[in-house]
Length: 266
Image (cartoon, rainbow, N blue to C red):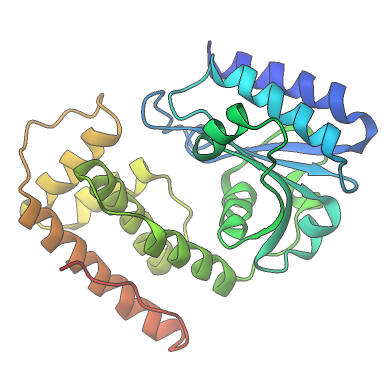
């Protein structure tokens, strides 16, 4: 099913379930930034509600997301539900009402009583930042009206948490890591919010051609339409990652010595 049809159906379902409690539905991530691919991307959403939801309503939302996931991209949906007061205050780490993602899908399917709910998400503030910069309002109040100001330090802290938390146990994860490093580097350099594809494409123009072939291979791994026939060795990939980490850590130190540096690979 086409993403736009899925999103229209989800809008309808959430409005039906939440009624006047629904403040807004906001699309962010790759689909909002025109770099979506059905094999490697998920559909990222923030849902804002007026007040705390009961467990019955939360489970009904989860069941609808499970149902729609069968018709969506391979990696499904990633949806976080927060209250309007949290969206306005933006105290990092953000408190969420409910969370759904491919990571939790198996547990949601096997345990009808399970809910990923009522917790603090250390990287959710980054999703809000992307939503404010590049997001799309699908329903409800305007993005800039609903969400407060994101402190740059909080955004950087969230990205660092996400990068340090990623398990680099496969070449696919390592290429994903490269693209995330590149878009983070360009944020630190010029303040722009970039997709993985945009960060990689921008780097192609800036880095030495010997690194360009690595970047092309990473872009091709993320989106097969961006073809590359270059075979990249593990050692070359690690060397490029460590170069990026050195460049990023240098910029982090210039911003604040309190920011935790990224760990280099062995």
